[in-house]
Length: 328
Image (cartoon, rainbow, N blue to C red; front, side, top):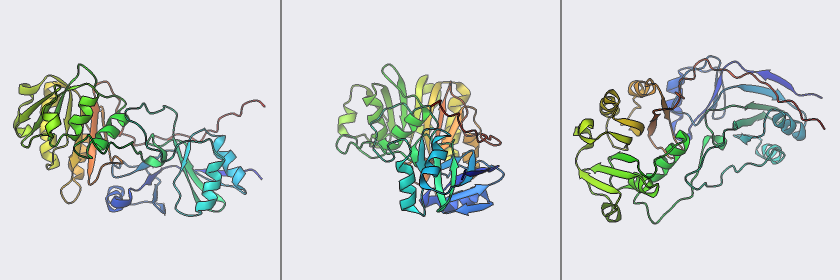
């Protein structure tokens, strides 16, 4: 019996376990919900989301091999997001081409350009899937091999993730601003890449970074320093704990003067998420705003001078189109 496929018109939003309420506030309403997945017929922008399934469809099948064949006929890479029928889902995934689902990765690495699909089981004979999603990582999450000795804080992991998602990172000869640098997690990443760092904070960095030849420490509140007194630079980084509007005002100065090429900044929330300021960051051409796997109650804004805008996805639809089978 051939599988029956129903193409859905909207998007499926995969909730972050700790921030389901934030996603529900962003969506305001939805047409269906399956476990951590929210389906909305009319797509809307959302940032507090682990992954967005951009061309979802529902397929009915009779056997495990039929389900696996259906997915393989569309593309190679698929990752499950299971919330029921776990064993049946595992058997289907075993018949799909192998991809490392939760193996920690070494930083840095280039994300493959091939699309990463997502799928789940709604019941024993029904799957929900999407060949294209907003996250390049299986299931919308990534793990890095951790260095538990050298970095002075675990904050370095979210910078590694941001740079991998951005698709570029500093290197030898690049000059970086690290605002709110103490104790130095982000500065540690940047020096490992060979970049020069102006590390700004009222508190000092870890001793081995204070003495590092690529680091110039400035004891100061970064936001009271004028960009023209620091720039031009290749990168501006900020992991400062502050209200989002204050960060936005500082970044506006940098952008208006054109003194930096690339940016990675943490938008830290104080209490309720600041949706208004988040939208202002997202409206900057060339921007991406995302909740990283290593983010907590915060989002990350990324900008590259020669990049494309990634989060203005309203109206984007990708039709279901199985690839043609190779001749036997």
